[in-house]
Amino acid sequence: MTYHITDDCIACGQCQAECPVDAISDGDIYSIDGEKCIGCGNCADVCPTGSCVPCE
Image 1: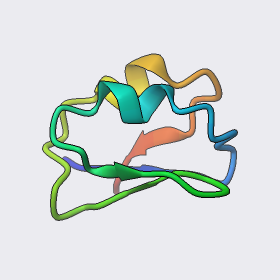
Image 2 (image 1 turned 90 degrees about the vertical axis):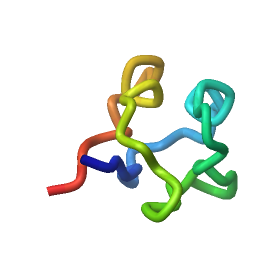
Image 3 (image 1 turned 180 degrees about the vertical axis):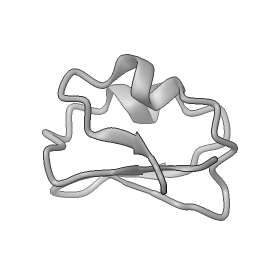
Image 4 (image 1 turned 135 degrees about the horizontal axis):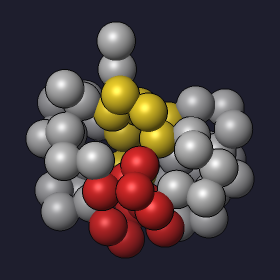
C-alpha cells in the first residue's frame, strides 16, 4: 500500500528525510510519487500533522 500527503501538510521536511527511496518532493505541501513509494510508512511515523496517510 502506498502513501499520499493531505492538505494538512506543513512542509516541515521530516517525512522527506525518512523516505528510503526519495519518493517525497517538497513544495508548498509535500507530495509522494506513487510509482516510487514502497509503502514502508516511515513518513507517517514522523509526520507531526498526520498528513502522510495510506492510499485507499
